[in-house]
Image 1 (cartoon, one colour):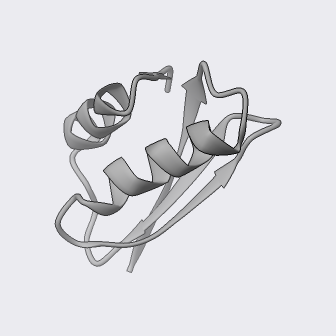
Image 2 (cartoon, one colour):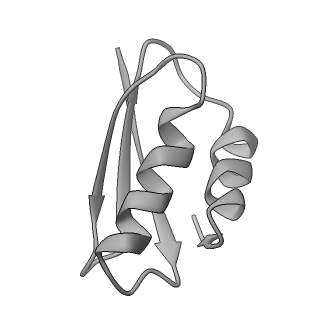
Length: 68
């Protein structure tokens, strides 16, 4: 198992959280996504370390920006 935490900007509501969660969960190997709206932190659990570019693309597909 691997866990990584990212910071996402632009999320303001529960719908934002759902959108990011759905997109990131579609990445092959992801086993869990936890989004903390107030801090903008997104913690992703996966079977193996993920390519940050894939996470960035998923967040951008949801309409938000990955800042770290």
